[in-house]
Length: 283
Image 1 (cartoon, rainbow, N blue to C red):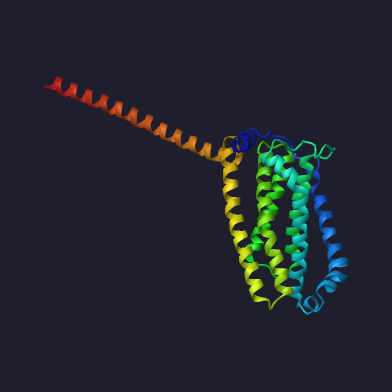
Image 2 (tube, rainbow, N blue to C red; image 1 turned 180 degrees about the vertical axis):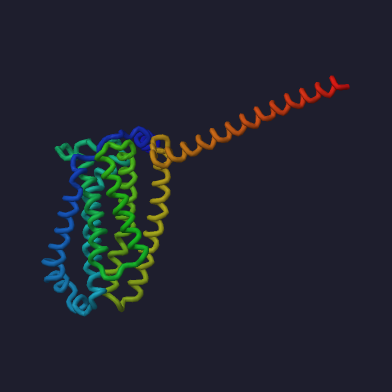
């Protein structure tokens, strides 16, 4: 398995991701509209009140918004997991590429991954906008995820040499994020529904802590492994070009200084020889 994965990663083709890449703004707009319609006409209008009764209606505004958001985030991650597990597994750890047909259809693996990525980014945007209280860690996480994910898609439009492997790395990170962060959404929902079931809550919170910790460690290991396998293929044009240019400039300065010191030393040696000869002649 590992030799196959290693070969696939090292030889992963540098291609465009999907013909949908230029339309990610439209996709995110549709995702946000769907979230609004579900929130306004389904969750808040009747479904949550019907499912939880006073447990939901008695929540204050801050907790109510958080409660609704955890339902949307959890459901979205579950949908992404269902539709993206096959293309992700085949592209990241199998033998498929972004333009490989999805189960024999005209839709490609890259199309499915682009849509899944925009759903996840749209979910982060919705949470930043909708929730009235969010932790600084979550805020930074969501903002960075949005910028990195969209940047990976954007550079693919101009056929940047790093774009395909950059997006591949993003899909690996996103997969671990979806899996490890799914249980915390469920635990918060259960915490609001069963606030007095302390032993039950202790068990699920402990499980959420363990899964999140293991997921974070596993994510770091896998991403660093893939980054190492792809090291020779990263162009890193800005950083490498700047560093290389500065390094060569310093080498040139050092070489010029050495040449000056060498020529100065030769001149001094010549003057000393002339001075010595003049002294001998005078004697």
